Image (cartoon, rainbow, N blue to C red; front, side, top):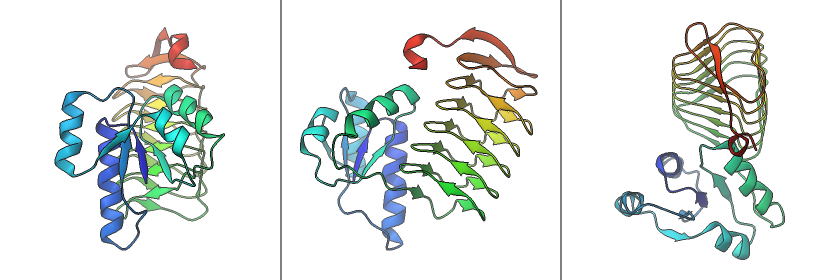
Amino acid sequence: MVVVGAGGFGREVASLLFELRSRGVGFGDIGVVDDRPSMANRARLHSLGVPLIGTVDDLVRNCRETPVVLAIGSATARRAIADRLSVTDATFPILVHPQASVGAGVTLGEGSVICAGARLSAQIRVGRHVHVDQNATVGHDCDLEDFVRLNPQSCVSGDVTLETGSLVGANATILQGLRVGGHTLVGAGAVVTHDLPAGVVASGVPARVHARVVAAQAG
């Protein structure tokens, strides 16, 4: 298994893989690729016993039916790497922590990561390469499109649509039946009470739009 990203979430994914392995679900040896790992992250990987095995270019060149997880917070970066790997025979397994709860009728797209304590209630569609971080909750009938990310303890109420690449910050809440536009960033602790357009930054209680997402972030 190759984890793309040596940062904090990459190491959390490595820990998730260790937990799965301890329960008899394994993907073989674990290695990490990262184009610019910091010295601190190199040391942290070493302390976990996880080798840094190269760059994304190395992965693209040498991929042989390799299982890969994209453990990078940026939706734009995840999408760019997924596009590069689309010409290879990489596979993207779905990772669900044993302490997560996934209810009836939930569908998970390839490469999705569901972390410890996350709760997905019922009849939710989760797209490709979505991250649902620790203790995040998702209500019934939600649609999480590709490359969405829910940060820890965020709460998405029922029948919400999160469009491609949107991010919900830690402890933020999206009220029922709303739509958050593509690549919109909802700040930590915000409470979203109305639909949000694509490509904006919204924060506060109630959440208000404060800025546009720069083109490099929006992709």
